[in-house]
Amino acid sequence: MSYGGKMIKLGKIIRQLRETKGISQTRLAHKAGLSPQYLNCIEMENDNADNIGLHTIEKIAGALEIDTFELFARASGEVRRERRATIPILGSVNLLSKDKKP
Image 1: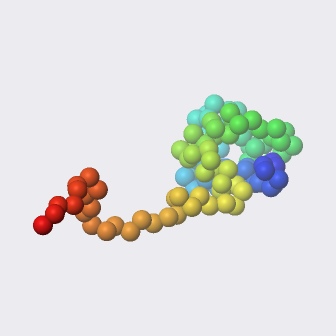
Image 2: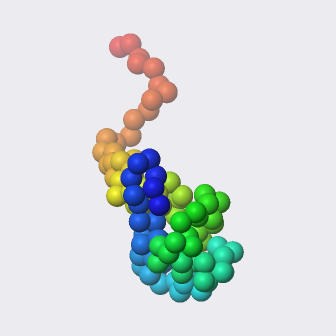
């Protein structure tokens, strides 16, 4: 599948996520409302799955309990910086209080 000029391996990522979560192909297919045969084609990146629609990808992502954008990001090899960013905790800060004059 080509996305923004890049070839992405969506099927490979779907398979990896499914296996990591310990879900069978049949269970994921049923959870996503797809036939197991079609999900297999997607995971194996067969020609039959070349024109996979966004709606189908959203259903698979939902069944995997992952954000659709995150699925595309993983498949394209990109990492969402928002998910990797760390925010240092500075302690209690009252942003609504006004400075008091001594």
